[in-house]
Length: 91
Image (cartoon, rainbow, N blue to C red; front, side, top):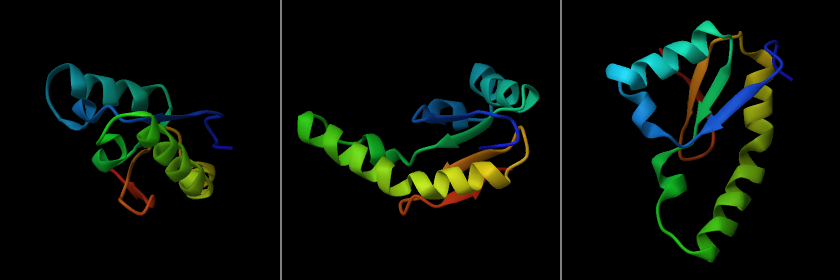
């Protein structure tokens, strides 16, 4: 588990914009020591029941990489997951 004791996984790509309330949300994650991961946009494309199973499959496949990154991360670090589920530290 992370040094912060918790981490956030989100698909809210609006938070990635560095302006207005979205920048404030990411800043709040940092200030409160959360470790956050943004899933790639492709993760949420499509719809229907089959898509939900594909999303679950990807998340289970990527989970070890997420946990490993979270365990090494410092509180307040933010990551983007690429299309292969590999965490990339955000500036």
